[in-house]
Length: 69
Image (cartoon, rainbow, N blue to C red; front, side, top):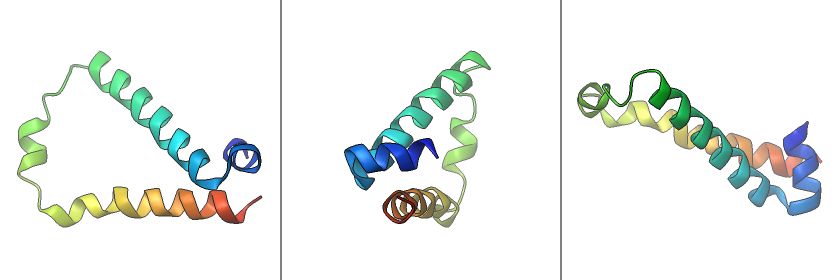
């Protein structure tokens, strides 16, 4: 609902950008507080298709920001 209201005032793609920027910042702080970046080696050993979820998630939020208002 907050993203839809932001989309009405700022536009759908700006709303999606701010949604992802704030989420990324919050998760970065949370991971840093929980012990840092110890997962770096395990992330590099993953196959590349597992990261497509983030790409599809970004498209999903952008499309919802465009459609819902």
